[in-house]
Image 1: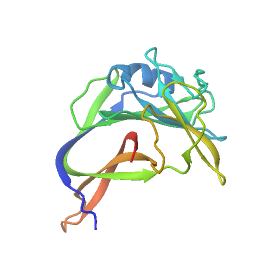
Image 2: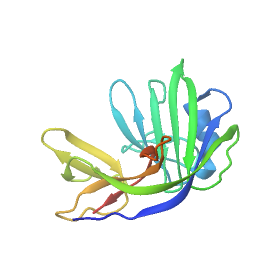
Image 3: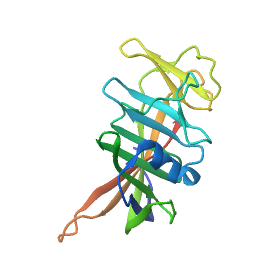
Length: 192
């Protein structure tokens, strides 16, 4: 039986003061998203990406990813997560979630809540496959899903798997003292 440790923490939530394009949201948060990776959702695919120092997003082929058909994005590092949702013609709502006070141009703090955090892991499908030779990327493959290139610098040893580590935030959710997950933040990809 695995018992996970629950940690007391404070969760800070921020939102953009106006609608932004995904590019504008990333630029506003670039300094807090250093070294971030992300998931971009379009009608065609969920694309793993890496944030470059110039605020552009790159895929496993190290090409800049076009943001024109993206309807949702989650870009994260161990400090915070930027969430963006396309609402109309490439502009939409942007929010930041972090365990510490941060500042980003055009974002305002909307909530600070004392809560408990619980670490979770989601297994990514696929086992180590022949790499695509892009530095800082690893390839996973599985017959049912094909190949998936992920932004991961860690080496995947035989018999090891890749997980998406998240934090769930727990707090009292009603007048009766019931505790619920009030938020989840993506943290990083790791090999276990």
